[in-house]
Length: 129
Image (cartoon, rainbow, N blue to C red; front, side, top):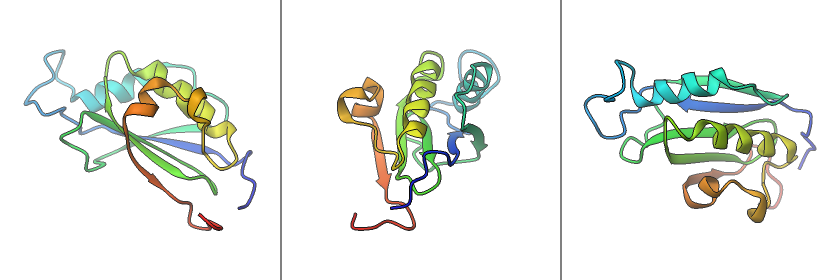
């Protein structure tokens, strides 16, 4: 697998997520947009790009984010709390970017990443996955 330690990582955030409810109870924004705004307000780790997306098709499982980049594995995480989860997600994004293959060692992963991984997708140019 190609080394991609310097390749940017992208944090995708579903901004249309409703967390299974008709309204957010907080304001007029969808929970996914609340999460995106919270992430956008945090300092971004070097090499991590934040991108809003219309839908990640995980609607029944809370707010959803994905991490991808370079020749790394892609991860999709669900059940993200739109208010309390931003710092954890940003920390995980920094760890993800630091790994040439995107595979964060299990014990180093944020707890949320250990319990809420929806999918792990191999890179396009995967060797012996």
